[in-house]
Length: 120
Image 1 (cartoon, rainbow, N blue to C red):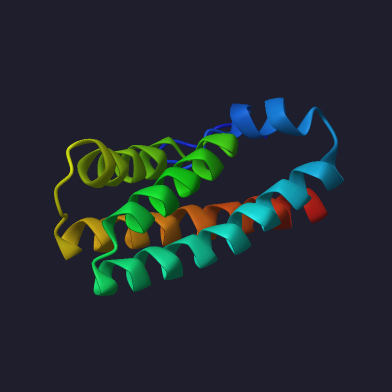
Image 2 (spheres, helix red, strand yellow; image 1 turned 90 degrees about the vertical axis):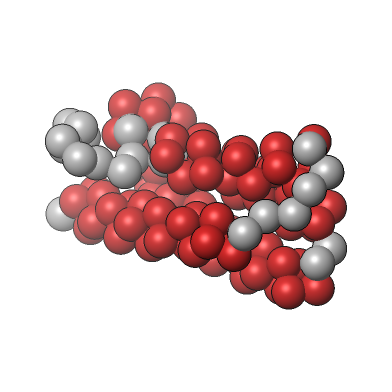
């Protein structure tokens, strides 16, 4: 799994966590995609309800999942939300959520392509 320029995912991180086990790597990717969708849904819901602690907690969880698969830009965006609402105790702009959602879609698409590569 070679890194591709402009990649959203650090493939060396996927290789490291997958330890050469293709099936395990596929499972990790699928879990990340499913978990990411749910976390984003929960972040959006909490944002609408202005439950900032939940926004921060879910962003923190998504950050961890992103780091696991080497989606470092997504992790940084999530960390920014987490830091803003939980540590700085202030609200965020909806545009921050839009950025996370857009980056997640790019990561998801790349991870899906990686799964296809692993399957072939």
